[in-house]
Length: 174
Image (cartoon, rainbow, N blue to C red; front, side, top):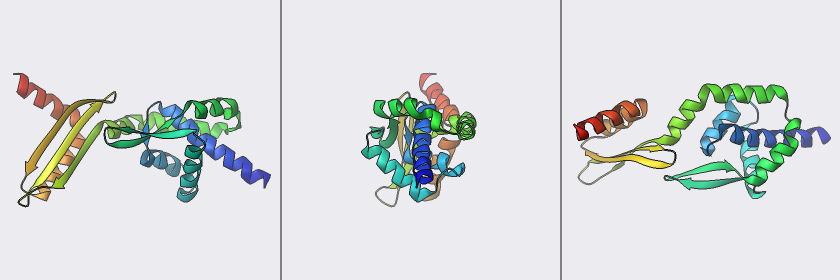
């Protein structure tokens, strides 16, 4: 029993450590990916631990630009600083390396939004957003006649948002 409670504590601390290391609010999906891709905890256990951390007020969700994002609370940060030495150095190293490699794509996911909905007369409404430091840089809504066009626009926006944003700004300014 002691071994499993020790493991439980380490896994929860690891989740808090990931949130602290990223230094930005992230989605449940992003935190899940980090934990699962590194084989730290299985999905169902992870979700249970996350729920327990939220109930204990160690993490909380915040609404930001139509997304629910996780943050480490002050209480969670205090607990992490008190018990960080219980985390294995190898797991800390894995998390640090993973975040170093993936931080740009994590930030991009949080700052770039592309989605479409069905409009009137069989058209599709494409909604594109660019967000920086939680401030809206640009929001563009377009109506296109086909789902393929809507999908293509969303994919191109996600692939190269800064170039598209710059081109739009240049066209409007020049």
